[in-house]
Image (tube, rainbow, N blue to C red; front, side):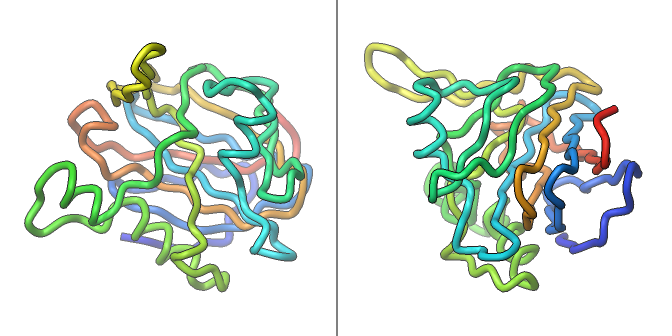
Length: 207
């Protein structure tokens, strides 16, 4: 299930399980991503609304931060080294910016699914297509609430259940006009073995 909406200000919107949507976020507005039940990941993408070839960049952001775990008041950079979003509030404190959105191939290769779900990648591709953004332009997402542990010696990655509790939120301020993609993640392992919705809200002023 994928939808594209005009988001009313300050109204909490639900993204149903294993789905995603696309919407616009204006410079200076605040996006609050909420985990209403706890233990649910949300993949977030951002594109420059004036030039969608400028897109959120894991590589640039982590390079400039010199660490992989981001929280308040970290900026999220584009592939052109411009700040797209800034984290202004974070009640969870553990998110991922390493792993790509789950996809049919994820479920086929990692889980061995015979009829795989299209995953966050497919949901994002459908949600962003009306904005003229092709699937090949989907980068690594900022994975809100995703808990990825890294072994400091071997570099091994392990996806553990999110540490987020019911009602935890992360708030971003837009530093330019943006096209956004947002999901309720479709990967069982990433979400502690169950699928739950994600809520979000857009405000002109931080609450």
